[in-house]
Image (cartoon, rainbow over all chains, first blue to last red; front, top):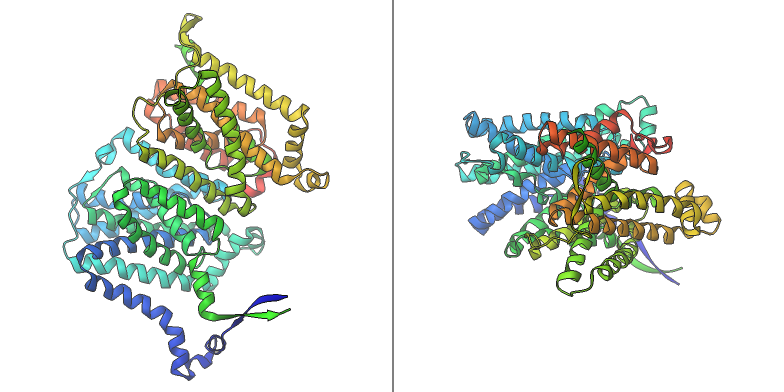
Length: 331
Length: 290
């Protein structure tokens, strides 16, 4: 009988420890997969022209949502309502910019921080929930915010807030999302492998064991949610200033479904996976713009196919191909 | 005023119960949180409409066809969407959610959102109870809710299939050891759940127009009733839909109809924080929730 066997490449084994710095080849082997995407992201917008600049900005902001979804998932909380964070951030910065008349940098920063505080406070009572129950509640949150804003007519009601001041400088508009995105991507990958991140993963895998080690699980969940809210609210706040408007569509299903789909497409729990997923899906959805609302159907079809047929995701697949050789052996 | 609140509270509670029964049946038996429940509810509303208006099928026959098709749909959906990811909570949720969103947004894109999309009531007209007018459709809803609960009770206590449902719900391993096919029972539970959803859509949708958003709302109703009542107990669900139904009507009358929806979220959060196993739920579920 013939069986497929996977073995680590020699160069992977060598570059795993201190010998990595013994030759340029090993150093390049480690650096290239990290440096090439970063360079592409930094250089592409200037090469591609202004239409694609917009696509890349949106990809980065959606990428932040996907990264934060993945962080929440690595503590065992599967959110179906990432739009909640996005919308709260957007409305907060819209409020600071339009109703209080603050300049753009202040409204983004204040919107992000206060939005994150609001999200964390509102989610605090339900953070004890697990699995399906947390998903259920997060699915409901954006829907209820829409209802509340519609019925109480605060923050512009159904019309939303328009006429918010733009960012102005196109370089800042382009490179701040890119830098925040890259910083969060590599920061989160580092965080999840630190001692702190190991506790987070342990809470996902077996929270009872973590509790019995004398660790306050609830505090960890709160901190994690605050980080998640910061990233997502920043995305919402920045988007508000790009579109110069914020409305009920900030709570739309798109913003919940897109991060989820990109995380599942790219590979849950890897952070690089959701990033890759967003950079596939957002440009794709730009091409699908002609189909209007059918886009959401495409997302759900992709999501469905990925979760049922491709549970691993793109990034773990690529990683395996990069690190390992496959060969057939006689058994 | 009080009579009105009682009558409409009863009607509202019956609607909630009808919409929630299918979801809770599926979850209670096989632990599958069917996030496509709201979409199935709307899907078969539209199918019924298509049968009546495009294909001109007689009313009773259209009802029968819708029920049978919804059962088959649920059975197939289990094998397509759930079977491969069974036991992985996230994947189950995501795949059924994706299925549901796909169905609902497809209808939105098809333009099934105008006023012509409404189902006819089963019997037109109204009568007076205690000097208060109520139309036959709402009476039928109350009767159907009672009837379905009674059916469910007899089904799960006196038929072989129903007993195997309960066996799987109580202890899956023992049930398998006794020769019950867990996959088949799970598929049948999804099938029953979606047939119940289509019953609800045939009865409840004639009260208004069929709208996409009521699909998402139906999912929320199902979840709210299930969580407040405790997902595996039928008495708990009846109690929960009575409580939610009456609270909603009271809020609608005395506060504002816009806040009616908020009742669900508050109820879910309060119950999950204060009484995680639900009003009449069993302790067994506690560990997986909190």
